[in-house]
Image (cartoon, rainbow, N blue to C red; front, side, top):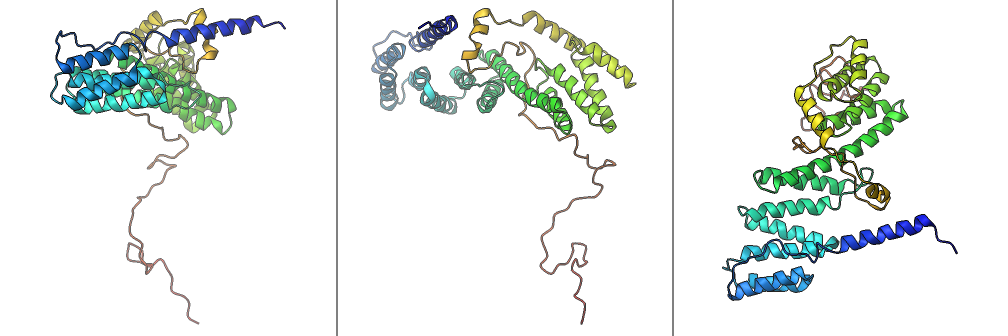
Length: 365
């Protein structure tokens, strides 16, 4: 029985990946030790627990740390011990380990919000969720959670040494979220017909919410095409999309075509934003291309590719918002509702709020 060459190659790659992922971190050196040389009982307990963490004896380490916390409630090692409990869960891994680690880290931030380790705890919560992010075409819940927890590092600990890494993970998460929205919008665009309005709504929303997205220019181009196919009343929105490509994404392959479209629409062609030019040049110079091994093993991974994510620029700090569909008339416009909407309790007699009566008397016989 002959075994496929590709099957053997895939099996070897999978085995190498499994070995690489199973060593190093879980049994590695602990990063937050206390080096003070003393024979105090609480320090002895702490050292024993750290040694157990480094050796992968996580349950024993947590028992020892809990003994220290319960017995020496005024110990100078109390905060470090509480943090180490979370680290032991984090290193143990698995769904239960990650969930328990997040609880311990949140607890640490609650009790010690001014310590440097509080920022570290929040950054680890950010990483816990980033390690569970799924591909753009799958469930985005962990990616949304990653974005939320990483933004919290930037909001609560903006001057921490952990802020730059959290900022990059936020950009990575937003790249994945934007890609998911882009894929849905493109499907509507390719479908055509009634899908054009939905496509325009989705694709313009991608560029609004995630301006650093690597395909924001393409999203605007497809949105403009969808506006054009939706009828003449969307002419201004079509032009606005082309204007944004020329102004905000001046080095885009679509920039020259967008200028030509604006000329056809008899709309002004804007100047390129110098900051946008500098940003796009920086991204082009610093974008990393995945290697051969990454491309060959990509089918084995459930995690998303984030090498196209922006490497600079402030990530979006507001929660994702949905655009109002472009087909919905704007209040006060010619096509929209012109009156006022009021709310009043129902009158059992049928009398209207203005004093009239919405019920007509029954005709007499």
